[in-house]
Length: 329
Image 1 (tube, rainbow, N blue to C red):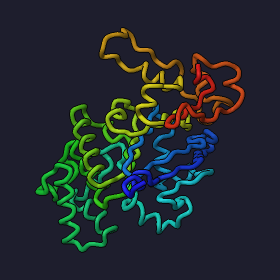
Image 2: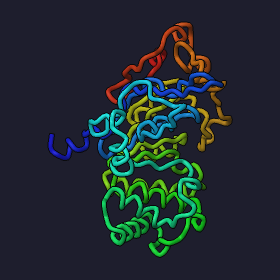
Image 3: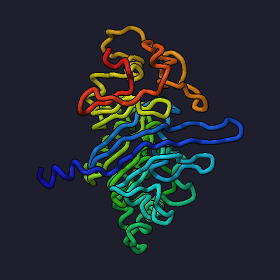
Image 4: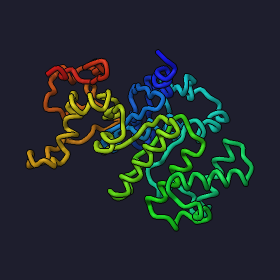
């Protein structure tokens, strides 16, 4: 194996058996993330796909050490960034890493920026904090980053309210990538944008990711975005990964009934299918999850064996795992 191959196979992020819960007097214990494990290699993009409330954002906030505590807490597991467990780091060290080695693009560009600070100053602040530049050099770097994401540097002194939603998202991406992080977490980065702007932002993110050699975890419910952007995909349901593998393997095999349900609920532009096929029912209450397979109450294939005991991930192939005892069928 040559040096380039080793770099491609280098693991940047390793999430091992992560379990997260939220506790409140009113609702009890919410089991948000349950024994989740996955890895991200250098330069790779992995998509976390699933319905709203599946636990995707909680996974990202756990990686960033930004869980609201209380009510949230990491019950067990490890999150290794370049081999170092960030859950065991002192707060001061994590503050140095956050925004430098790992950055996050938050879901809503309308609220992610400080409304009373100029956009250039908000980028400069990140640069000064992590790259230790003086004000002049930090401002020059911020202006360069604005140009990089397609915004004229002449808009350095504009405020967030003077930008459209797509332009605000570009500013957020500039902030996230200013220090060339090893890992970028993107939480529904195009949800608040119209379709044409979505495509522009996604293309820009892919180009910048390749330019900076950044690995990415992309959180989305849009399977089209995953197909265009991701090398691998993990399907998340009720706080568990129910299917994970290369994008080609998951999209072609669709081994879990929930994954098949997600695809069947999409419009068919070929016209071969006249009606959408929705997934029946709702996700289970996270304070009272089913004993066995979490999808069994909604699954057309479920039987008593599915409901008796938790189901483990099993190999479909070398690049594909599924959490379903009926997968072979």
